[in-house]
Image (cartoon, rainbow, N blue to C red; front, side):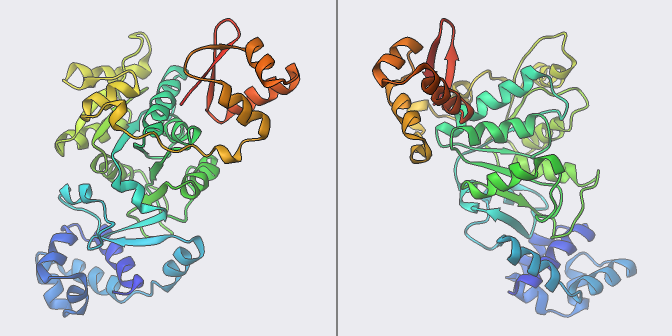
Length: 361
């Protein structure tokens, strides 16, 4: 089927509420549905009202060449529900999208995926925990899923990127719409690092309040486990958790101070029976894995400067004093400080008390 037909079906799925994918499957294929008469199509969709029939006719007759051109210019792909690359978890939804628009590598969604979600205005504690858990998961080959909102979502994506891992951002707008604007560079880095930016909305679709719950259902369906961290009681992250529970997925919360309102959402989930997690290792246990069973993702050390590679080679997960590093590396204090700073900026090294450093991955 032509790309423009898949764009039309995505628009139809948005505007005509009956589940489109089950209808397409009853026809045998999307091609047969598109080739059918409008009367047959309307009957298959549940006998649409007069208004619904007009919408159906208008959508299927619309010129979607501009949207296809946008996808081509961006280098984004259409992944139909019939494709082997279509994430099987989405088929558990009552209304799975007929296709996904993907900027990046859709194969990252075939890995073990865990979502990390929370409030846009989270506390520093929530941001730090989201980043640390994402780093631990991504370093062991798990793809971190989130919704690329500011706050916890962005911290989770960044954590995965810090260790050269994979992350996928599910957006509530068109693949060509940079929302939120401040995360435009983060979107690009995700798409170009082996991860993916994913949406069910056709190109050009602007974000709106009613779209985000639909985005959240995709986040939940793509994931083995949804981790809620730094979420208030009114956070949309709780919608994602509800979807995960409804789909039979695992749900977990990261506890924090009971005095902090940004922990109340996670605490409510825990009171209602969600798992408690405080590290990547505790997440591995919930999805039936151990750190040893999750292969370490290859780190891109080729991009390091010579001094950085030398210092990295001297470090381990055991704290190492800066004086010893300087002696072994033969670097001046200034050169050693620069190398350590760059390694920490990449998320490869963490400081420890007493002038010591350890590998972070």
